[in-house]
Image 1 (spheres, rainbow, N blue to C red):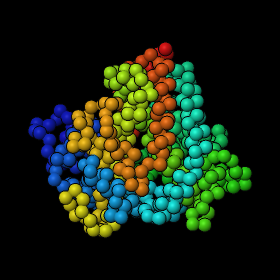
Image 2: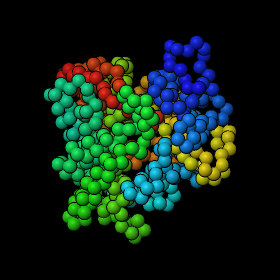
Image 3: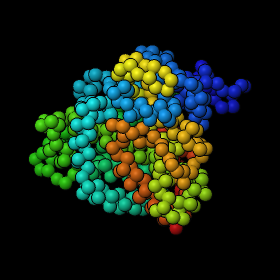
Image 4: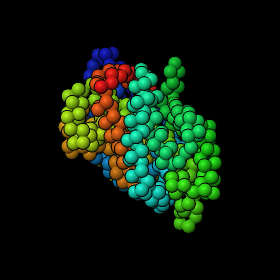
Length: 423
């Protein structure tokens, strides 16, 4: 049975009422879903769910902070391959577009991650930080001038896109097309589209990914001939064990960086704006000493909103976790949205408190080999934009309720009503 909508229940909600495999669950109000996760955390062992459609595949839901963290740090037991999304990427899609780094394990993953980490040189990151501050200032200027009533298409979306494009060295004339392809590639992560009760999951929008790959391939060829001081140039000159990166490896990484780097950050920014405007005492505290409180505020925004709801893992070898044993080939799903509200770790977990300390949220993953490579960059972007908004606008109290996308994958904001008052 799926959790009934709030207001329609004539009895207390029970764990057996919850079905995380039912698409209808993900159309429920977010507070109802969080309540359901709280019930699942009370169980002695992870609950098992079976999909009602398609393959009928079953999975165990890891909803406790300790279990999600442990699974993230045990890749020898809980593998990212063959895929971390539901459904898993098709074999033919990997052959055509290359395998994303998030779906890799072991030395294959480690080798690519080392190359990418080396490409983010101190010089590159120092330039990025200065660039981010300037971009944030310009984008807020433009948003004020345009008097936009929906903030999502402006600074929250444009800042992470512009930052990544600048880092990569993507020319200005390519950016509108890339922005459009990112929107198309990630448009179908929701459980259903407006007016259509169809399951929508990650993995659609392949034509848009193909178009991005073509742009990246063209730019890679140009940088091989004429290197510049940018990420594309660094990566096209890199190698894995003496072998040059293939076009598919480059394309899959660029697609991951563009889609994941833009989507997660813009959603975190949007949720942060809403939280600060609807918790004026927290906003006042942040404004009273921005440098002192901003790092804690970012951590709390990420914890409270949890931009990525879940990733899956496949059991590689027999193991035990959370009081249950698992066999090879079984699936577990790491629900970060639940782990970040675990009352055994976070006091008053539903409260928004920028002074929360410690704050061991799992918003960037639970550590381990797949900890988010872009976490530092995302934090710089959020810090710069909130500083501009808080110091140059009289109020964020004009932020309306965000319109969320019904999604079992990310906590996506479709629109964010907003009006400006300049100080």
